[in-house]
Image (cartoon, rainbow, N blue to C red; front, top):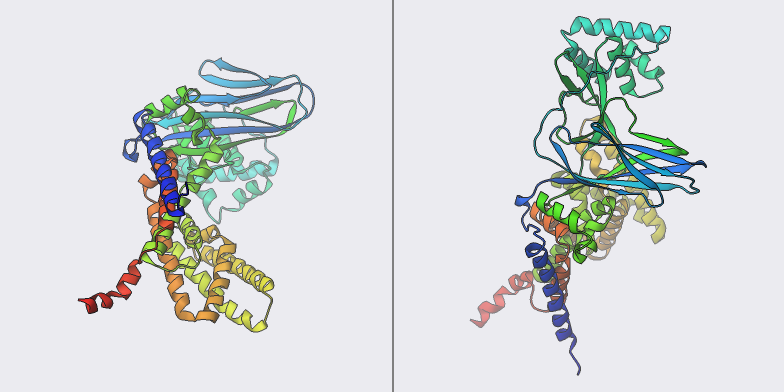
Length: 509
């Protein structure tokens, strides 16, 4: 039996739409996944990777594990330690993961993943006050610290104001000769200099190591805050901003000067983190963690991927939504765009730059690029050389825009680097050719159509509900594929054509 292509597409699209909606309903009704982001509890998945190079002989690795603090709770944690002996050493309130192995002959990575969420914005609990260890100082560094400490004590009333003024001074462009000397001659970072000054001033202090939670971040390392004790309680400061208090997005990994990662039998060890923010209720996350091996749909879902890849797919799954907008505008409305994928890529860049800033950058770079491309056309270059020249010019434009905006304090314009350079260069080249062949009017129509489609795609991709559905219900992409197949067979009039031929209907009447 021969089936016409039109009927085949209808049948295939119907199967895709039904399958996608069916899987979505199954996850909603059987697994308890919420369709709305309003019912969610922000749950962060933090995956730490310990990579190292063995140097021969027995290997022993110790990683300090976090404990619930400042309102943060730990739902669950997992370890990946294939080929290693593994134990968790519990010593009072402290926990340590220990991996051991007799020998190893290749670079290795160990994984530790945990799910965390915050129920309340509490302060850090009280902890023992460490003994102040006087810093070992050379004569010139001792004189510099004495000068700084004396000056700060005259300007402060207690240890809290002393610390705040110290941090604010180190943030200034003109930090003073003594502070500049300490920072220039100290092998460690600024945090070590601050610790030395606090110790010299006999102020009890300790570092607070943790992670600034940002959705989708990869290869993030531990950051450090500083907390001091004023004889009554601990006060936390951010040395990067001099702000007092524990930041809301800071997850405390360890308090105190102890090392987080210790290693015997290895070198070049690195501890990095990948972060992703989930939008599921705690009950659902607990269900997933407990039954991920039992539910086939979960075992072969995005949740089974490493956190680093989950963060990547969180952005990739929004691309089909932007593509659907372009298809609808071109097939049903009849808006002409410069290419099919360029509006989608521009919309992705808008997500990083924000809409107004992205529009300004795009118009500025493409406008200047078109003018330079107009000059290059007189040189009669070959196509490849001409595009290469445009790519170089675009990169120079982006660098110049970044430098000028930074000098004038327009930090938002620094996001120009999020625009794909090749796409900008190709857009300039394509519009230039279009200008030569069909005139500036067509360039204006296609350019405006591209920006209109990119803006609509950006607005739709920025909706929290869309982000929630695409990440937690990727099965909907199957239904979306079915809709796109149906749109691909549309041969009727577009909206702009109906408007264009509106007078023909009046003649019939």
